[in-house]
Length: 164
Image (tube, rainbow, N blue to C red):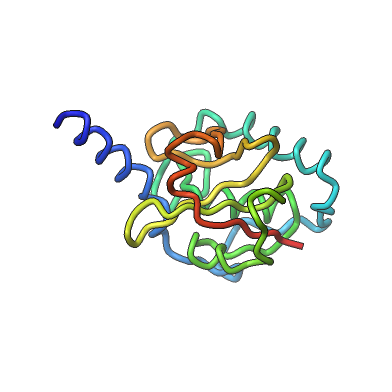
C-alpha cells in the first residue's frame, strides 16, 4: 500500500508541468536570440543542451517559472529554444507539442522535443540530447537529465517533435 502511495505522489509531482499557462512572445521579456542555430548540427546542439544542464542543474521546479528562481518543464524548453537556439517558441507544453514535425522515437536527434503523457490531462516535455538521454525539469528534482529507457519514461512516452 505504501509503495502505491509513493508512486502516486511521484506521478503527481511529475505531472505539474503541463498546466503552465501560455505566454506569447509579445508578453515575454525573454528575447529570441538574433542568430538561429542549425539544429541539424547535432554536435553544436548537444553542446548547447549540455551547457544548459550545467547552467540550470541546481534550479528547482516552479510551476509557471522561467528563471533561475524556479522553472517548469515547458519553461526550460521555451527559454532554451528562444535564447540558445533562436526560435520563437510557445510557452506551454500543449502548444509546444504542436510545433515542428512529428519524429519517430528511433529517429531522435539532439534538440528534438520529447513529450510524455504523465496523467489523464497532463503532459511533460524535455529536449533530447543523445543516446536516450533528455534534459527536462522534474517537479521533485529540478533541472536534470533522464533516460528514455527508464521504465517510468518508457511507460509514459507520447511523441517527439522536431523544430526546423
